[in-house]
Image (cartoon, rainbow, N blue to C red; front, side, top):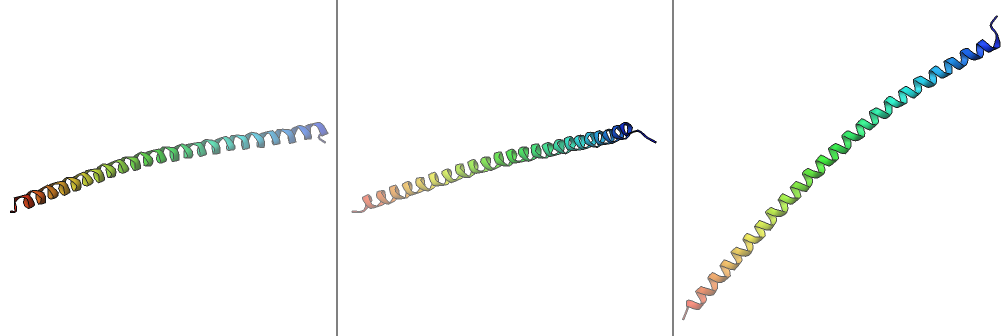
Length: 88
C-alpha cells in the first residue's frame, strides 16, 4: 500500500503540471492577443493617415474651386463694368 506522503506528492506533482500547462497556455493566448492588438493599431494608423490625406486633398480641391469661382466672378464683374463704361 502506498504511503500517504507519496499520494500527496503525486497529487502535488499533477497539480503543478496542470498549473504549468495552464500558465503556458495563458502566455500563448496573451501573445496571440497582443499580436492581434498590434495589427489593429497598425491598421487604424494606416486608415487614419489615408483619411487625413484624403481630407487634405479634398480641402485643396475645394480651395482651388473657390479661388477659380472668385476669379471668374471678378473677371465677370470687371467685364460688365468695362461694358457699362463704354456705353454713352
